[in-house]
Length: 266
Ligand SMILES: C[S@@+](CC[C@H](N)C(=O)[O-])C[C@H]1O[C@@H](n2cnc3c(N)ncnc32)[C@H](O)[C@@H]1O
Image (tube, rainbow, N blue to C red; front, side, top):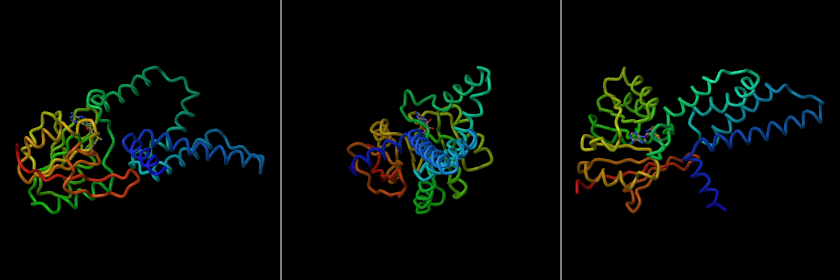
């Protein structure tokens, strides 16, 4: 039973959209129950929009409780009210085309790479900061697949003497990351596949990808990374190569940082 719950938690943690859906379903059940109660006790039925707003608020709170990143709060909050508002409106077809294009620009590479976009949470950032604080102040750090670079920029502001690089191949997250990094002197974003990034340039290599590329990434890292440099994977293991150190993040997803100190190029 416990193993099944853990498996569901792991799957949901890797696919946050599933968690968001679960949050919406829980909220819908609760609102339906409350509406039935209000009808029975007070013969009162709230308007569709009021019920939708309550549902959005509950779904956002469930999502937070399940450990979704903070930007999901707004998606969960607005999803049902927006459906209700727009269902009566005759929207031009370009709105749907635009929605599709936005989705495509965010997940451009996930069909080939099977690495969707989800973000390092606050606990991951904090744990990373604690790790980085133990290194020389002028270290070089790369985030392989930096997304919109929330985690990267947060770290770059905390370690002004270090150099930070993010590489990303999904066009929209890349554009957002590139613009956000402009004011920072110690952080640069490249439109570059992680498979083309020369890892020898970095003292610390961070990735939050998926189980799919980890074996190949290990081969690349052990070929390119210098002796003593760190490979840090958020949650995803390298098959057959146990991490030298693990930092539990104690979140709902049971995330952890897996850390390998590289033995040197082979
Ligand atoms: C799970 S997200 C992690 C985002 C960010 N590193 C963080 O921790 O918040 C993985 C990112 O890797 C990007 N990605 C996938 N394959 C890539 C590749 N070959 N080169 C560069 N980025 C890639 C995806 O577009 C996505 O933005």
